[in-house]
Length: 86
Image 1: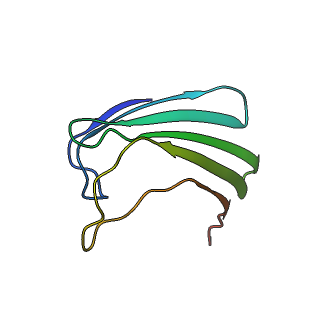
Image 2: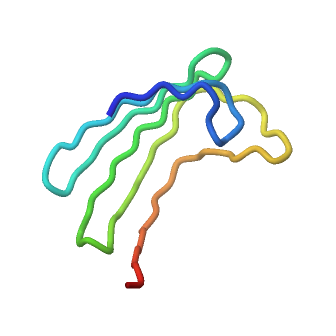
């Protein structure tokens, strides 16, 4: 994955994303802020099954102040459960 996002959903500055599938179930990506936003976000995603995956991220660097209606990124982990109705 290679992506340059000039207007992210978070309302922050532009960002560059580079990602790579490392194994059948493991995916890694790095998101780097461009311009005033110099944050770097390291993301690791592991798929246990088709419906269960773990996504962790570590956020480093200086960010801009939070503004009203702006999504704030932070370090953490998510256990994602997905399902579809047919």
